[in-house]
Length: 64
Image (cartoon, rainbow, N blue to C red; front, side):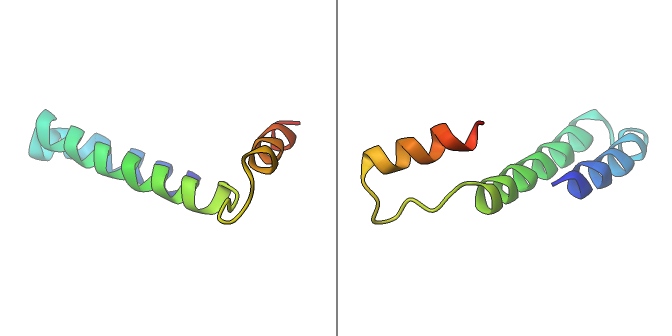
């Protein structure tokens, strides 16, 4: 996740001058979307087949 953010920062600044604000913001939005999906995929716990109470305990315990 941090690598994608860093890569986005190195690409975003030169892209503003080369492609313009709209294209650079679109590129940044794509990087943010990819980083968000990676974060959700790798960091969110599996909840398939578990009761609602157990899922709630999972989320409550992960914040400690």
